[in-house]
Image 1: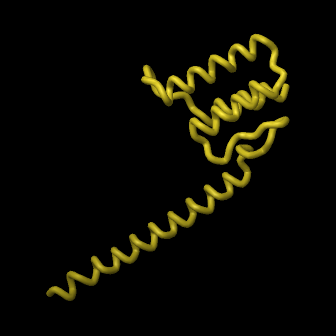
Image 2 (image 1 turned 180 degrees about the vertical axis):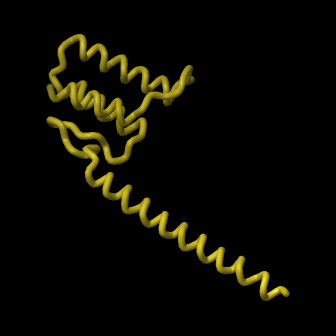
Image 3 (image 1 turned 45 degrees about the vertical axis):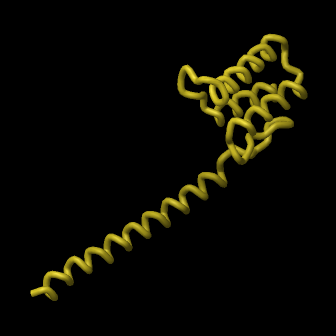
Length: 114
């Protein structure tokens, strides 16, 4: 009896493991293709989104934009406000969820290029 009950479960286990491995392989390939086509590291003007998106790299990017890009006064003021919000959101007491770093970096790279 044990042998007849153990075999179907054993086959299902291998089938599920094979499906999980295939799903992982397809997901890995899709993510690599997406990342290869992603404009994340494509420079716009003199700036590009950092490969490693974290508060420090994005703040460094925004400060370089502030120091090197010739932004009109209203945009420079808005950039200073964005930097202050990121600092407060990630290093102070957050009142709300922190902002999306990648979209913030992309936004300011595009504005600095115009």
